[in-house]
Length: 85
Image (cartoon, rainbow, N blue to C red; front, side, top):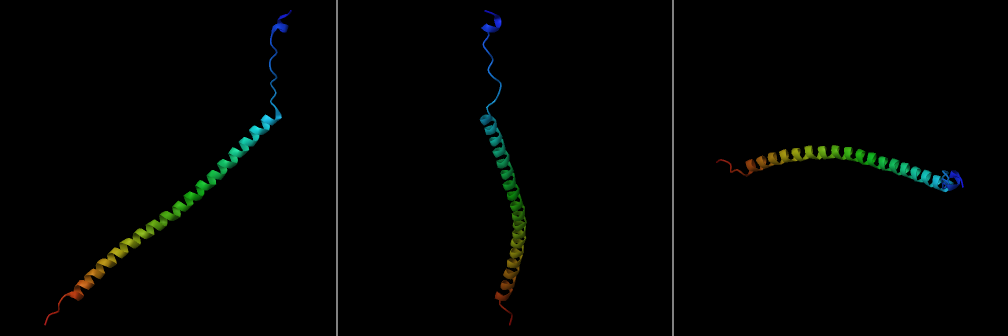
C-alpha cells in the first residue's frame, strides 16, 4: 500500500451549475431591490423638498394673518370708542 492509496481523495472543486445560477439570481435580485429602494428614497427626498417650501409659505402666511388680525383689532377698538359731543 502506497502513501497515495492511503490518502483520502480530495473532493472535486467544481460547483454545480444550479448553485452558480442561484447565486447569480440572488445577486441580480439584490441589485434590483437596491436600485428600487434608491429610487424610492430619491422620490421621498424630492417630496420633502417641495413640502419644506410649502411649510415656509404657510409660516409667512401665518405671520401676515397675525399682523392683519392686530390691525383689525385696532380698527375695531377705534370704532367702539365713544365719540365726543
